[in-house]
Image (cartoon, rainbow, N blue to C red):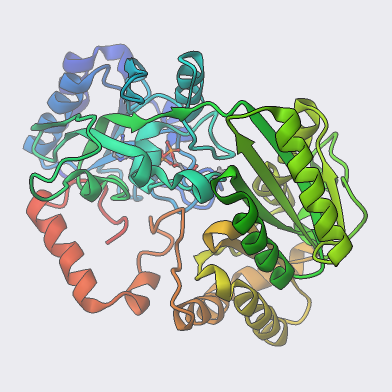
Length: 470
Ligand SMILES: Cc1cc2nc3c(=O)[nH]c(=O)nc-3n(C[C@H](O)[C@H](O)[C@H](O)COP(=O)(O)OP(=O)(O)OC[C@H]3O[C@@H](n4cnc5c(N)ncnc54)[C@H](O)[C@@H]3O)c2cc1C
């Protein structure tokens, strides 16, 4: 460990003593990840209150040669916000940078600080009569800075794109403590390299995002949510294409849920029930429109009626109220929570071209069943984006403990197949600690070398979130 015994006191002089945590009991929640898979250690956690304080904190750490781990809501699913075990790092929490700086309804933009929770940004947009469409099950805790740094996806990427596509400008504190003010709310700006994209998805390895200008959209006036029962992933992909052809951008979500995933939610999440008769697969879809609800409802009902008659779907339930729609969404959004309650599983967060999803599922399921008899595969996700959460476990605890030790073999089967289908081994959650080594097998060495050059150029001393991503 680098010897900088008075660093916490020097940080306290910048942010105030109340905002530097050193007591092990106070630090504990920030030293482990949401899944409880990684545990690290840190010299202290510091909570600056504004961009200038973030910059001063970074300058002090940089002068002392101390590594920094930016932390938002700490909901990362790949250990990206957990420090390593050396105890050398300072965790920089953005939680106090939680102001909405400005809303410009005519420009359809909101300028927010990095520590705003996603839910609070959605709310601020709604109060201004606009939609901020990023939506994840962790939205009550995750922060915009974390969403930007992981390029978070979620359930409306199909229509609005992921965080990268929702971002117009950024303010970033660089690893030497300089502030880059790139808070531009422009939809067109061809004045050289678009630097914001370097920091989006960088998992805190290039600097600390302190604020962003984000895109807003008109609030849909009508929204219809439906639950479909289907025979197979192929039927889901076909149904997606047909429904998109019919509704185009008015189809705003199309989420796949396997029967096993649904069973877990029903078992562990109180107040949930199966909405339709049993089927091997389900799709939760949402239609949004600026027109009348009655009109949209009529169109969705007649479309789903046609699909039932044609045998494209086995059953369809259309929510009749906001409360019913929320109940349907609960089934989808609680899958990760239900899995967490059940115990540890081997998780994959993969993407392949949408057309190849059925092929991926058929081949991966067969290869894993052959290699690990009795395996339980919980698959669900954003079929409209070709992105599946593909999680593996065994039914009883002892068998599961043995199985978890086989993670490298299971990863090899799943990730090699994904690679052969021109896919990605991390569609949403990032690399963090979990896939930092794994990516070396799949990414083009030229691309890895470019990424290292960028890291070297911006953070030559490797002080920003070391051990993550690269
Ligand atoms: C129940 C559940 C559901 C989820 N669903 C989804 C989903 O649908 N789609 C999806 O994409 N993800 C999902 N996630 C993963 C996670 O919520 C997202 O990755 C989220 O964007 C992380 O935000 P956070 O504020 O919690 O970041 P953290 O976990 O605190 O940090 C994540 C990474 O970002 C860095 N970081 C955080 N803040 C900053 C900052 N201001 N500047 C620089 N770096 C920073 C950290 O160092 C770390 O590398 C889910 C997680 C949970 C627990």
